[in-house]
Image 1: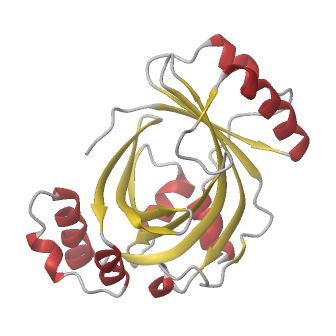
Image 2 (image 1 turned 90 degrees about the vertical axis):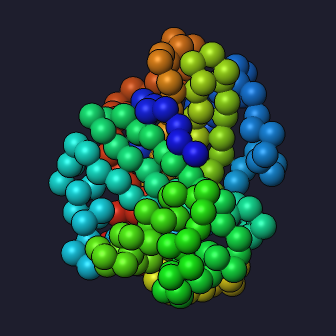
Image 3 (image 1 turned 135 degrees about the horizontal axis):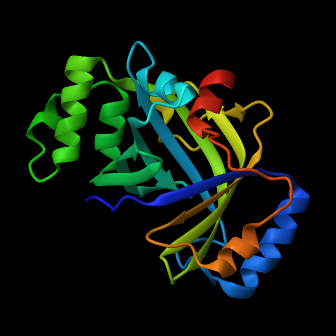
Length: 226
C-alpha cells in the first residue's frame, strides 16, 4: 500500500520547547486514537547494503533515496509492518505491507526464499530481490517514544520523538528484552507532516524562536552510536 508524497519538517527541541508546543497542540489538535496514554513505543529494524548505501545517501543529502524497515508498536508483535520510505525533492512517501511475527523473524534471520512467492505483497518481493541481489540486510534496531497529534485539515500529523535507543543484535528484534542503549546525545525531534498545505494554526503552534528545520535521522544516529 502506498501513500501520496507528503511534506515534512523536522526540528530539534529541548524539553522546555516540548512543554510549550505540547500545550499549544493540545488546544487545537485531536489525540491519536491508537496511542496508549498519548504515546507509542516504537521499535524498527532498519536495512542497508554492505556499502551502507542508505546511510551514506542520507548523510550526503542525496535527493532521491529509499530505505527499508520493519516496525511494530508498544511491544505488540501481532501488528508488524514492512515499510519502504522514499524521498524525492524533499517530499516523502511510504509503502507498507503486513508481516506475521514468524515472517519478520525469518527475515531477521536471513531466511528469505519464501518471500519470492509472497503473492499479493509486491513489497516483500522487492525486498527479497534487494536482499538476494544487492546484499540488503538488517543493520540496526531503533527504539523510541513518540507522542502524536492529529489535525484533520491538511491531513497534518505532528509528533515528538525522544528516548532514542539503539541495538545491533538484529535477530532479537522481536524480543522485548533485547538490550538497547541510548543513541548518544540524540535530541528530542519534532516532526510535522502534511499533504497539500500546512494550516497557519499549526505553523503557529510549532514555531519556536531559534529553531530551524533539520535533516536529523534516527537511523543515522543509531548507526553511529549503536
